Length: 186
Image 1 (cartoon, rainbow, N blue to C red):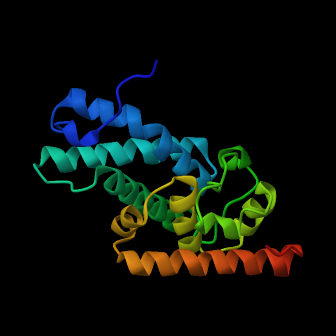
Image 2 (cartoon, rainbow, N blue to C red):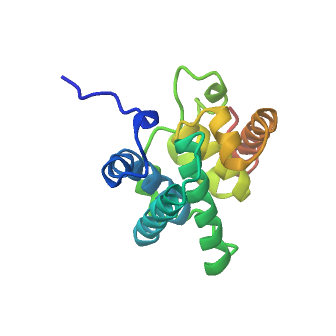
Image 3 (cartoon, one colour):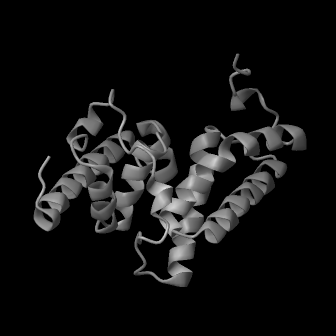
């Protein structure tokens, strides 16, 4: 027997109890997202906590949020970018915390994922490290975090068409990286 389906639209986010439910639902996902990007459990925890603090301050100021999931990912990504800028702008995904990428990167029912479906996970993780930050971000939001195109557009502050093109180009670069650097072609 499963519990009730989580519906953030029914929450009154200015109430601490409801905001706590939001935290319980999204914190593990945002933590995983931050862990994959920073390769540091401590930094991922800090970023996740700061994400919810910023979101709490935003809703307490009586600001409206159209899509809470996209809003939280946008805050998280902005904090990750800030972290990269202040720590080491050349830092990329390293081998230090590869267990954070131990999730399936593709959904077998997703036609976009068919391009990378034939790669093994280790090859994808290595190739992802070689991609530009923005490519890593759109691919992770789409295939790891399972955000819809519209949600990614909201996070990235781009149109749906621009996000679709960005994902397509990132997948092409991923394929090219796998072929050129690792001798594998999808």
